[in-house]
Length: 89
Image (cartoon, rainbow, N blue to C red; front, side, top):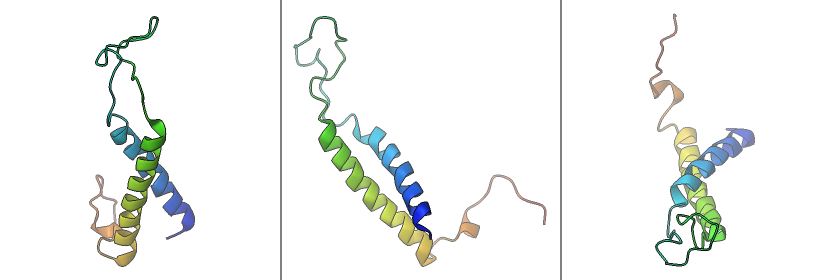
């Protein structure tokens, strides 16, 4: 497997993981009773983005390593994955 393929897999997994991690620990201004005038009450008080980026990176690293291992070890081959359209042979 090429380095470019691994980077592409990591990139896709990272963005997918980010959207799964973003809601973790978010408290809105309305929930904390600290609404700043002129802002939406649903806006987060402290989004803690640095921690979420670190968690996303670690999760994406583990998932990508698992995908690369499965693809390179031969546990699942590309031919084993069903395709929606059969090609004429």
